[in-house]
Length: 168
Image (cartoon, rainbow, N blue to C red; front, side, top):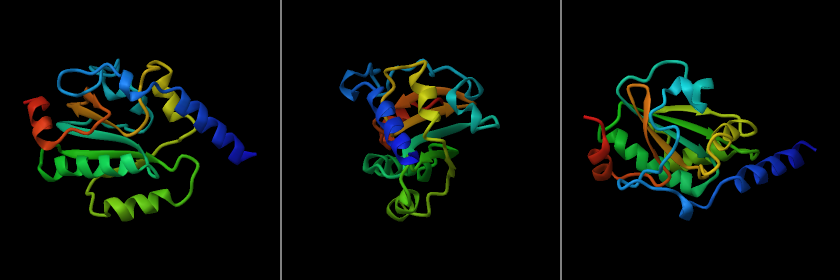
């Protein structure tokens, strides 16, 4: 019964997202979102991130078993390695599966040098799709400067792209 509930919840969650082709994008490749300009405490992350994020941070929202998410984590790691951000916070979920976090760590690497938090697959995604039905599925990267969400990406920016939008 629990597995059936997880499967149904996953299907409802995924069907609630619009296709990425229909996203409203900004000129810099980020997506338009009602979360841009909000403090972390006024966003769906408030349940998980309890301290102010000073400086430049990326919150990477992903599902551990998703190959696109593995690629996103690798791309975001490059921003951290290039010292373009102070920290990366990976918020991941196994989404009802088992051992996907372990596989994620094996593929992406254990040297991520970032904060990793697990989120509740049953409730967290609805916090995004409730107020913003067009929010795409993970992976999503949220660029945060001094505790304010500045950009949201469904396709991870390269180092050069990120340098152009980073708050100076």
